[in-house]
Image 1 (cartoon, helix red, strand yellow):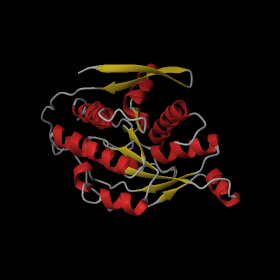
Image 2: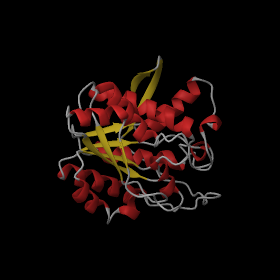
Image 3: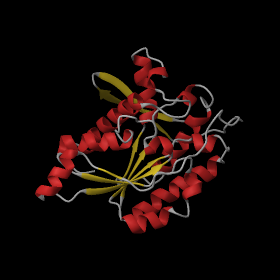
Length: 262
């Protein structure tokens, strides 16, 4: 497995973005101690106050962003009503660039990419997003041991269909969880490697990879911190974890797009 490392400066800390061009097999793991899927609140929208003010003034029509992923991408346990790391990142980006983003939440709590395969094309047709954010966490695939080839093929399909719908694609790896350091210490990174590998196959300027997972690990290591203060439970970060992950993603997007729209 070949890894290309790109330095990123975040708040004075040099971090590492890891882009993976290969993969290896997953070892056998047991099911999590508790992972009961809850009812998905459904479609939701999120926009910063700055975005709403800009919209009211008619400065610019908001850019439609559709997010897909599981419960972590949905923002579970972000108790300060931050909306999770994806919403937080776009809110910060909108406030800094004065470009409004309208987020349509199509994350499904407890699901993986294979389980939304039939719904995804319909979402593209009904939402008409200008940007699709793909942020599967890998845990919902590591538990049932989804074959790597099926997982990568489905992420590839999601990207291909989004591009065919004239949307830009952001593939975003998730924040770390307790399971990232314990139960699925080996398994989760392997799925995320395949997620990024699927994106790299397109060689497209409209497909962007943001490896929040490895950068967050690097941040904790550099600051001599454990994952404990950032966790709500075994599979989900708390608000502090979402804030850190959103901060990392925001700086990634600023580095990639500057003050221009995504």
